Image (cartoon, rainbow, N blue to C red):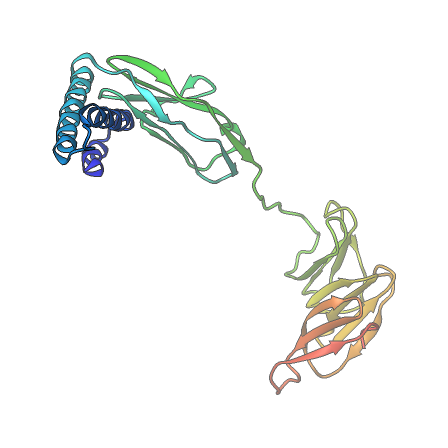
Length: 288
């Protein structure tokens, strides 16, 4: 029965906080009447029914009085659920919500750092594509004919998002491979055989002469640099940062990619030969 009564209030967009108090009062009234009417023979069934009927009547009168007070004299708005803090990456959507009650019509005005946000006049504030400039303290003012109140402030924290940064490597041909061992040291190769190495995270690139053409991949592993070139038929390795190169493998198989599990073990992925399907070749510590 209680749920049915509250359903109508919720559907109408309101909230009734007096239910719990009236339930507690009803329990006290029932217990008091039963104790007063209790005779030497104990509690009589008729007395229990009488106590329940009296309690229902009294609670109905209290509810009617509350309804009259709300509709005729108005109840100032009050915040039931305050907005909560939000932490987001740049570019995402921030949402603040508030639940308020009081005599309709409730009016909302959201503020950022105590300054009104134009057009933000609903119980929900949505900020799409947030940036660091949107960070701040957000609250909402709720008003009606009887008064005005404000919610607690909720903080929006915007963290920097991931950004793609274009780096000029000096290679004008198609890049075919890249490998980095950390945030500073890495290498890139181009289809035309060009190769560049950086030691400062891409701020500057040093040209490396490999003596090879058509480099398809590059991999750092331990203190060595491996490249695939010569029309994808040769694997070369350098142990001095690209100063000198030794042929680690040359054969008829075309090799496209190098991958290393550890400095002593890696794999070269190729097609096996010009006429045979795909194959994987094991590479030892020296590239053999």
